[in-house]
Amino acid sequence: MHLPFRLLYTDIEQSIGALREDFFAETALMKGYVFHYLKTNRGVKTPDYLLNYEGGEVVVEIGGKGKGRSQFKGIKMDKKLILSGRTDSRPYSKPLSLFGFI
Image 1 (tube, one colour):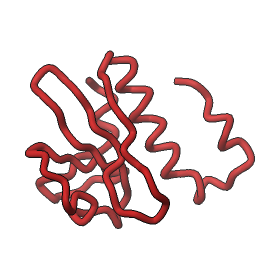
Image 2 (cartoon, helix red, strand yellow):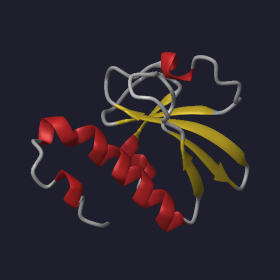
Image 3 (cartoon, rainbow, N blue to C red):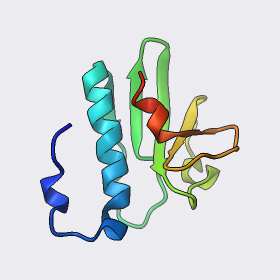
Image 4 (cartoon, helix red, strand yellow):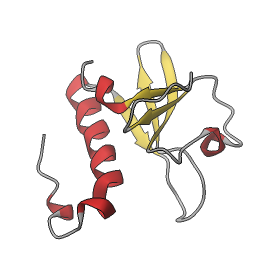
């Protein structure tokens, strides 16, 4: 994994979200997945990534405890996934750490 130099002088509390997204992006690149960053306007609730894989496409949101299905409002994709930084019992949410095992 590349060092996140852009976060070098930032407090960990402020940079944890960016570190989670960096982990996802690096892991997807190592696996050879093609993905696209979906964020456009600041403050607008949209998912983070569109990930292409052998079986199709999935919309991915990287987040913590505050992330939910509202991030996918208006998205017409069948496959949606929240990769959370913590263990979660919601059926549409999986731990981000498991993505590192692909």
